Length: 125
Image (cartoon, rainbow, N blue to C red; front, side):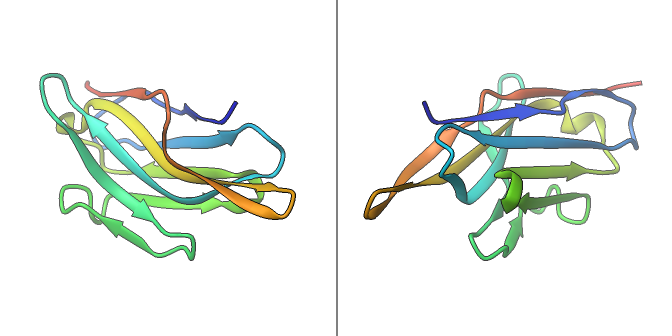
């Protein structure tokens, strides 16, 4: 079974920081090809926040640029979202999404658009 397992959410005060993790789980040959972080606040649509390519290039939504950083550790098959200077408006369920590669005999198989289970981030004093 191929899945993304998220962790790191919780309650934080305004101005604080959190780091979310998104780990690929499944066959030992599984790896993250490229990935994204989204969030969804109550009653709102799911918004794309940050993306990272297979080569490590990154892109951010204007709402989080300069405050959030997406990164990856290929050795751990894990993607991260470092969130600094958090505001009440950042309160949401955060989701990771990634394309995952599995090395099979003689070929590489890619799983497209695998979602994590979501982790709640609450910014409140």
